[in-house]
Amino acid sequence: VRKNTSAAAIKTRDWTIAIASCEAVLKIDPTCTKSLYRRALSNWHLGEVEQASADLETILKQPVTDYALIQESSQVRKNGLLTPTPLGIAPLPFITPRHGLCLDAGV
Image (cartoon, rainbow, N blue to C red):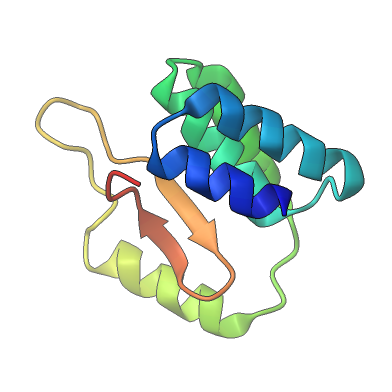
């Protein structure tokens, strides 16, 4: 239920509720990738870049057991989707168990 709350809060751009909901999930499961990502996204939108980076690093340090995920991530890098923008601000990357390394599409 908390995961759904954080997703709904992100849709409505209520970043503080999303963070609170993610923290409730992470108390139960500290390795929950979705909650770590959603908290990072919310912190990023609030300007808390260091906290967002810490969550993203935690996700990236988790062992990958889905080799299709690695394949998709390689394709994203290969196609140059992770290169910096002219302003030097790249979209926030995120990881989902199904879709691999993706880019923030304004979720």
